[in-house]
Image 1 (cartoon, helix red, strand yellow):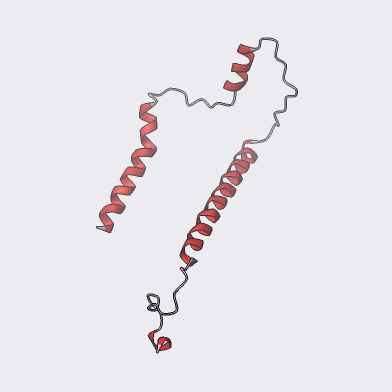
Image 2 (cartoon, rainbow, N blue to C red):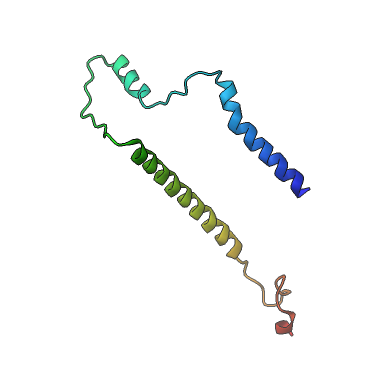
Length: 111
């Protein structure tokens, strides 16, 4: 059963990764970097930006910064998920003095 679920999960992941290339129909995967600026210029013909800054970075540095950003984001998300999972695991409900011992408690200490 576990093997079947693993295989189905892998197939679903591969399908979700490859599907966008066929849905797009070979169109250019353009980003949204310039679309905001173009829209502002269309709506406000006399618009002048406060400043323009486009650093000239080599491709290796740019992709390295992107990888660093992705790693920091993944580390943050992993930390938060781990924190909340551990907090939920360690939360114990208060026990009454006359109640039965908690599940997995040492029965020797109860006697």
